[in-house]
Image 1 (tube, helix red, strand yellow):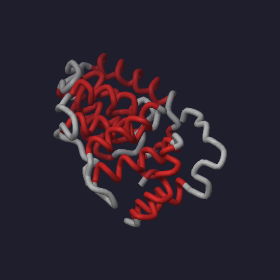
Image 2 (tube, one colour):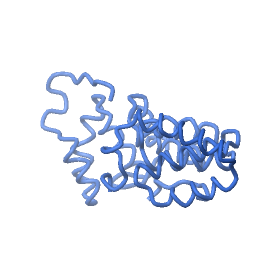
Image 3 (tube, rainbow, N blue to C red):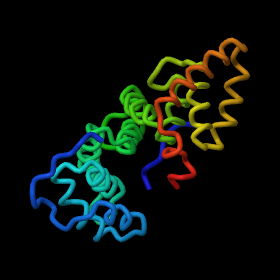
Length: 204
């Protein structure tokens, strides 16, 4: 799959009456997960056309990977973009991945960083870890190990075991005062996230 990163390491929706009648976005997402892409398209496309963000994300992912449809980065960017505009975190993250890797667009770490941040601020764990990485290594943003440490703390609190090791490695480059400052920033970020619903072990 192409939901990978290059690094080392809802708004309310108005649906027109009768539009997508009988379509079920949850059924479409589940069909995607089990490889039944024909059903996924049938369930999600009508709802995506009517502005349902989860369905738009699903259609974008089908095009990004060429599952049930020809692989088409332009279509993937289109549907991810529509979902991302509505605040759909995973679509924002996937747009970041596409910009980071130059899939369908010019490779652009600056744009990737913007998308990762939007998703990370909602607590989407892959985006949190990706943002920590680019802050740590200065890819698309100014290198800032204090901020990277803070994001690693957030990722670790959200259940990412990898983040614990990266957090500790970053701490070796910081003073005790910088670590304390980053921990306070992480605490504030976590307060703005629904931690229990976004924990990585619950999303798998």
